[in-house]
Image (cartoon, rainbow, N blue to C red; front, side, top):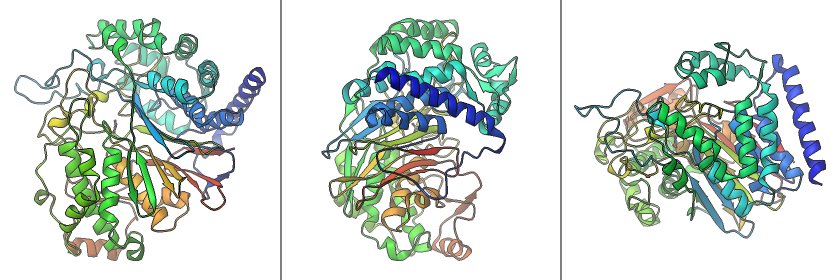
Length: 573
Ligand code: GLY
């Protein structure tokens, strides 16, 4: 069975690569306007090859965790902007019996990190230090997290689920239009780092659209992981390569940092919205708490009759969001270092108190809500994937190296990018960042601490059965995007593709404005919102990608939807 699977899997992946290569000129990665239907399993990711690999694993008898781990390794090869070995993430699992768990494989600050490491002698932030190069890197968690999930909750061997990623890294995949554009844009940056230039450029030039992108060093790294497991990365040859690179360039990550890294299994954070159970990621993510808190606030409003994106709807949504983000800034950080009042924040009674402050006709200026302590910018280049298998084991995973292509540092000889996740800490409390997202003491830098995240892998259940599996890429807009997708289904009766694609708004307390997608709000709605006192700002480039699954409660049919704004794909089985 396993040899047969390996043969057919390898054959079908080669065939898929060939088809992709041949049809690239007319290629449209966008999801279909209708959700993809399936009965036995569904995988929705940011890349067609990764979705295909996940569904092949399900077809071969793997469960949703096996498929999710295979997808995680595949994305590290085919989606280097955010898929990774050198980053971290969160996995939320709901078991068929209704219980749930979460795996935290967020990066950690190196032991040599210090609170003011990104400030100059006058206390000002040193530009680029937390975002570009060796000092920006946190200790990676992805390999440990994926392997932990597989060992504890999967059924297949690591060698099998990692094989498709090795295959594609060894033989290449065709460069898409988006990937080509990224390479053109980033070529000057990659040239600052010899190993990155070697990995991502061909004789100093970006790969052309349709060219095969082969990653021999990365294939070797994956083979080492396949053979020796987690230890290969944290104690063996790969650890040696990471530390050598750090030492050569005065980076902070040491042998001790890598050896000490361990993922943490944590209870999920759970709440309810009407008849639905909300299961999501707790700290060090802010996502689950923020989504539950928002839904608690909104529960008492008649959103259904207000109508999708009406002025009444957008007003209460924005008012709820500004309160949630104010609390996020003040209370959230790594729970191993900071006492996060989780139960208080997600209690219905607290939501009622917050709701009392919402004027139905008038915007509350953000400065009247709370004085928080500003935090540094959170970037938008995460990636989320959703998986469900025939037994309705549901897995939601969001993973990141922070900004697109992370720190831009590839580890010489190992072929993978390192994260720039240190930028998710509050480098300097009370300083608004590029995007105005704020935070404070709870998220200050400390050795071995995990930086705060917005990643929100989420599962919604109804009547004891899974109903939605979703999450998003998009930095601070992850929370607003996931919440709106849930409301689009539950309140506005959209199918899952409509719910994912519907125009969204974003409000994050500071800056005090509602950002809305181009053509997302009608003219009279904009007028009404302005009269209520809201400041509005249109965006032509909404940076959040939701990849979601809906399970029909009546027929158990699975519906998958990749975000039409991006190049992802749903694969049914
Ligand atoms: N790096 C983005 C996040 O974790 O939210």
